[in-house]
Length: 96
Image (cartoon, rainbow, N blue to C red; front, side, top):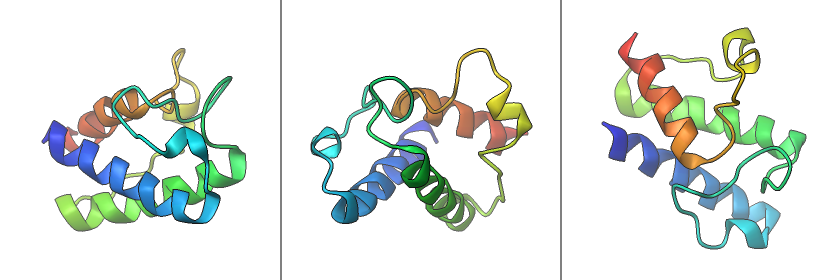
């Protein structure tokens, strides 16, 4: 499941980057920083990314999840740090 989630995240980032043309999203890997200090996404692009990703996850896994909720935002370490941390977070949400 981990690989399928990561694929969805990467595909979503690639689609978003067609609009953004952000060089930080040229070669996306599990270590690609998403949001925060040196992250590739600003707050507006993060919102767009989250919306698209929630939809993809719902279609792929037949499970509705909410990524930007109080649970995610109140964590000591943000799940939006990089692709890998987001993959782990989504896997937990799907398993609940």
